[in-house]
Structures are given as C-alpha cells and as structure tokens.
Image 1: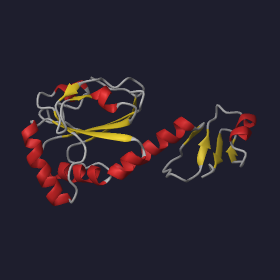
Image 2: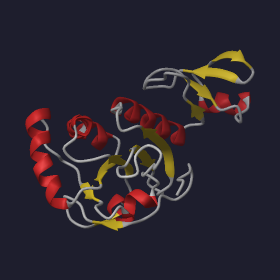
Image 3: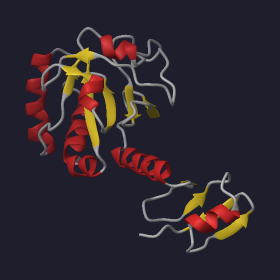
Length: 210
C-alpha cells in the first residue's frame, strides 16, 4: 500500500511496550511520528531509538507523540530496551510496536521486497491532529535517520499551518519565510505590517515577529 500526503493515516490496533494501542485513539489531538526499524538488536536502530528518547522535551514542546515499530515480538523489545539504555544513555520513553505479524508494516507499505522482503525499511510518517499524513520519508536499512531534520520539518508544518507562508531552502526556526503567492500585497500588508522584501513578484520574504 502506498501512503500519500493528505490522506488519513490508516488506523490499526497492535501490541506495544506500553500496552495495546488503537492508533487514532492513542494519537488523540496530538501530532504523531510513526517510524519503523528493520530489526531489534541491530546497531543503527539502537542509536536511533536512543536519540528519539533523548529528544523527548523537543517532541513534547511541539505536541508530538512518537511511536516506533519493529517486526519483532514483544518480549524481544524489553531485552533490546536494556541495550538501548546502557549504550545510548537514554531509556525508551515512548511505545514501541511489536508488529510480529507484520500487520502495520504491510498496512503502511514499510516492507520493500526489492530491498529486503523480511524487514521494514526506515520509514517515517508525520501525522497531524486531524490524522492526515503530512510528511513521508523512506531510508534504506543501512542509513540512520536525522531526527533534527524531522523536527525541523514539523516546525515548518506547524508554522505554515498557522500562517500564510512557506519556508525556503534550509530554513530554520526564526529565519525569514516566504509569503504565500496566493496573498495579495494588500492582504499581506494586513498580515505582515512589519513589511517584507520583494525579490520577484512571486518571491516575497518576511521576517515574522517573535
């Protein structure tokens, strides 16, 4: 199954390290990051899960719930969690789905047979409070993810949901943004009384008030 931007994220019920999860109910009014791992007790996955745990204050600040997935059974998750805590310095503080039957992995298209028919790729789905999929990333099993970039993308999504702007290349929070071309200069003056820089008629750059 191919998950596309803007569609409702498929709901599911699956076991996890924090009990049985009904995904939409668990997500509630929060943003969500659902991300998969090829296997337990693998080196890259161990570093990633430790990093996601370390970033808990950042997820909380953005009203984001994170949910990991591995196609290993629940009892293997507990033992792996001990390795993560001892090697990465941060214990798991979010649920990890035990998708041993592959139900969620297949529902979200996380199994890519031409890469490896037996494990999930490093998939990432960012889901908003309306349960819509807003971002999809797919990494090969060998490449660890950059969670700072995932946080940056969430910052962009949340900002552009709230304002008539988009974010330019390599944007970081606090930097200038682009006024939506759908907004006339007259309407833009009402929204952005601080003024902006016009580079072309379709490229107007504004520094938002802090």
